[in-house]
Length: 173
Image (cartoon, rainbow, N blue to C red):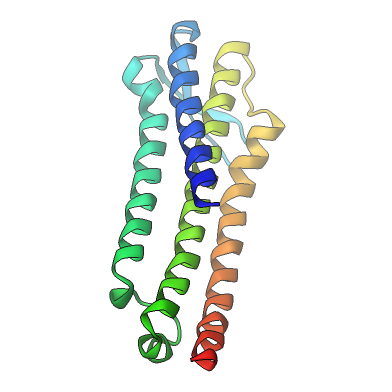
């Protein structure tokens, strides 16, 4: 499972960077760089390679940060902070690794969601810039609003589920 998510995330990152590089020569002199809450472009700037590749670079930085945290969680199971900390601290090392793997899966999934979000925003910006439209396409707007809401729901679900997972593991010991 982990190998597949890494390959998928790598493919998403290549698609985002490669697609953005492919699109660069086709862009007009001005591109939107901000959209309001309803998806209308309300700020434009001159097209430059740095400005156009800023979003893919930010996406890679966010994904790298999430992967770095996931790697740290996997190597430092004694130094993470989780709900039911005392129960977690009392777990056997193998049980702590189970909890850490669960957190890692969440972080890798968050990286996937962020790469999809940034790709949708970049593709929608390309659409607005090249078609003369002033609003994000419905799919781009939906992903831009829905993905952060979905990530918040997933984080809340993890915060609800993780203490139960620790309790079950503690009961098994």
